[in-house]
Each structure stands twice: as C-alpha cells, then as structure tokens.
Length: 474
Image (cartoon, rainbow, N blue to C red; front, side, top):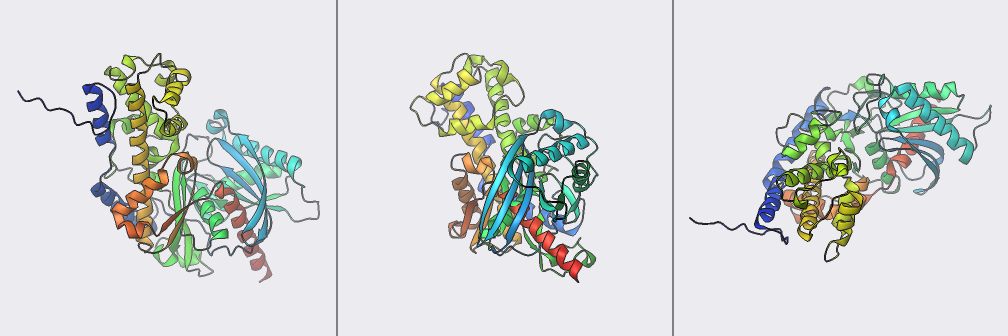
C-alpha cells in the first residue's frame, strides 16, 4: 500500500494529523483567482439589478447626495454616528481648505437598547446629544437658528429625501422593535422636540456615504467610500442615468451623478457564488438575522473571530487542538473576539508567547503547545485573507461598473478591520492585481478615513441646509 505524505504547505510543528487538518482549512478558506473573477462578475450583475428596480438583493439605494464638496465649505455642524458598539456625538467646525476641528463624545449603546423599543433608543440618543451640547458646546439662543445635524445611521434605509428614510431591516446585532418600516429621522426628531433641543435632522447619512464625503472634502476625486469594521458596506458616485428606478421627478435639480449606498453586505444571499464553509453556516444559523447579510458575515469584524471559534471547536472535538480541551469562554457564542485574531496575527515571538497568553490567560484554555498556537495563528491568517479577497471583489465590481479600471482611483476606507488587521491593504491589492493586473491595481490608492462618517455627515448636513435655503429664496 502506498502512503501519501501530507505536504506541509503551512509549516507548523505538529503531528501529521494536525498538518493535514490545517492544510485542509487552508483550502476551505481559499478564494482562487477564478473564484475572485466569478464573484466580481456576479457583483456587477447584482449592482445593475439594484439600480434597475427596488427589492434587489444588493439594494443600491440613492442617497440624495449629489455634487461633491469643494473643501471650501465653512460653518458649525453636528453629527451623530450610530452603527456599532458606541454612539458618537460630534460638533465639526468646517474652516475651509479641507480643514476642520472637532469636539466629540462617545456613549455606550447597551444590549437592552439594541433589542428594546426604538423610542427608548431615540430618547437615549437625544439625551446623549443634550449632554454633549451642555458639556462641550453652546446651545443656540431663542432667536438663533437651530443647529443642523447629519445623522449617520449605518443600517439599510430606503431614503425618500436627504433627511427622510425608512428602516428596511436591522443588522450588526440590533433588533429594536417598532423601527422597521418607520422613518428613523422623524423618530429622532420627535425625541429632540420632547426635550426642546434646538437641533434639526438635516440629513440621514449612511456611514459609507459619510466616509466618501469626508475624504472628498480633502480630495474631491475620491471615487468610493467603504466600511470595513464591525460591519461592511460601500458607496460610490453613479451616473443618475444609470439609476433606472429613480424617476425624473425625484431629480428636480437634474444632477448628473448621485452617491449610491450599495448595502453590499447582503450580496449573494441566494448563495450562488460565495465560498461558504460549514463554519460560516454555523455563524449564520446562530445569528439574529438568519440568511441575511451573508457577505458581511464572511468579511466583517463582528464575525471573523466567531468563524475561527467554530473552526477551533471542530478541531478540539477531533482531538487535534488543545489536546481536546476547550473552555467556558471558547464554548460561548462571541467568546473569541476578532481583536484576539488581530493580536495573534501580530505576534512575531519565536514561541508565540503573546498568543499563549491570549489563549491560556484570556480565553482560559488549560494549556497549549506551540503547534496549537501555530494552528490558531494560521486559522486567523486564512480567515483574514479570505475577508480581504472578498472585499476586493466588491471594490472590483464598483470599478468595473464605474469604468475605473486602469485609472487613478482613491478608495476611502474606514473601520477597525482595515486599520488594524495586519496587511489587510496588501491583501486587497494582491487580489485586485489578480483581477485586473498589477499595473491597474497599483493605480488604486487605499486611504484610511478614520472616523470619516462623522465628518461626512456634518458636510452633508451643511450641503442639505444650503440647498434648503436656496430653495426658500427662489
């Protein structure tokens, strides 16, 4: 009998069975060049469906944000950023020439608020704004104009005007009641009125749209805004002629281009092209939004640690990891955070001492071998690389739709995954190189737009307010 020796493609100091297992996981999480192209082509098809009609998987929502900031805008504007663990309240002083100053404060959104009644969440937001204005800013007097606010609401909203939008569904662990199908701007404005706060919700802003506009304040040629953090999404400038579902009556100014909020986290919920593994399926089954946001669940920071946790549990059950021993923390949903993966990926010590501390001291694994730690590190590499390559498919789809291939292109990106996960930018560029060639990939500039959604919301509030003033004067 011929014995086939496992090729140790991924070098670990483990047994033959462990080597075979880790190389098997490498193949499961791999996204080949051919698969990259298939996914990217499907992205373009789904984008065009979303531009053509409502109800498509990739919603392609018109943001009602037209035109580009010049960088010369000035004034004092508020911004709210709701979309993850924290609520951020900001006051931006736009000074022109792409310059601004900011005062800001963060407030924690409890699980009770995420899952309770929407009115309670809006009241909490209003209280937070009141606290911020009292402690950090001056409120307008009785005869002064109200403060204009851009509301970054990072969930799928069907907008009907720049300051009106109905929540389609919750994502990212939110499930507040009495919210879906309601106008989120009006709900918040009611909470402001109850507290006599002189604040007007001038614009609802998706975080990707805000990121795009914030970077465009400094670099007007910015083509795309992307979020790669707790969740993921993208926006870009689309020709209004291509937005077939948008009637001429909705475009009274006759603008040539409109920022489109893609809501790309929902891509391929039909499961036609995404390379789902058994671990992705487990994450999906245990999520609050079953069979929704599958693309987001494969690439965003909320889920990567959970995917690796399921992979670890599977190896533990086969006595291939940690000598078959788990821990109460590792057995619990969300017990292995994506932040741990980032720290482990950065561990360059010879014996992976920092990884050992995370696994044994933080996670509570009784003991680990060097092979155990190497396997966990490899799993993080596989999942992180896959996330970057799938993200590149979405960006590549936008570049194809927007005729940006081979041209100079700035993609503004906000989010902890892009900012902190080791070599994420390099992996993005590598995948784009496989899709379009290295020369075209090297013309793409990835720009970190840290907390860009807040500044972008303030800029859009300014633009909406100016537009309203112009209409009143006509």
